Image (cartoon, rainbow, N blue to C red; front, side, top):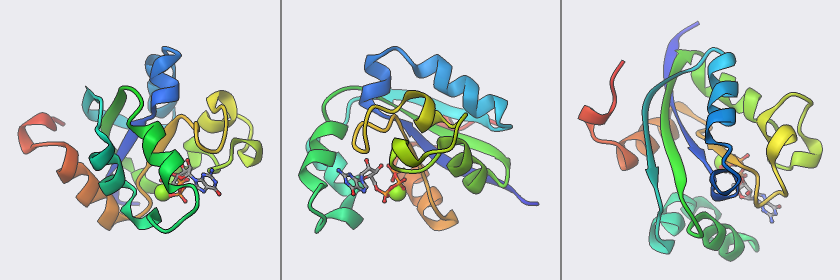
Length: 140
Ligand code: GTP
Ligand code: MG
């Protein structure tokens, strides 16, 4: 298995409930190492850029307004098979369908307020990392 990097974002519903540490612990317990981390409050334009692939979907306005409604924690995670490993520990997009023990099953409030984002391919991982982090902010 290859060692990969992926991008994660703890969403505003989770930072609001002071769950940054609890969620990060679940990522670490799943074998991922946090090699970059910072707190950012993105504007609506950044949220629209970030979720541009969903621009035509009916939930786009709700999603981008929510993502710009409060602070997020952006993180770079490293580990074996990190992209799939992170998606696995996050759980399904809809928390009602997420497996027991996953972050979304444990903490998410709804399909919009679902507590965490994770990149889905090596290409999106690298582009999301370079959008949010400079090289000197990633150590490890
Ligand atoms: P992210 O890691 O946030 O990208 O989630 P994902 O990869 O599991 O799902 P996807 O990229 O398909 O959708 C991005 C975000 O849009 C999700 O995390 C949800 O918050 C939201 N979303 C996706 N599908 C729906 C839907 O059918 N209804 C609503 N209201 N929101 C949705
Ligand atoms: Mg996605």
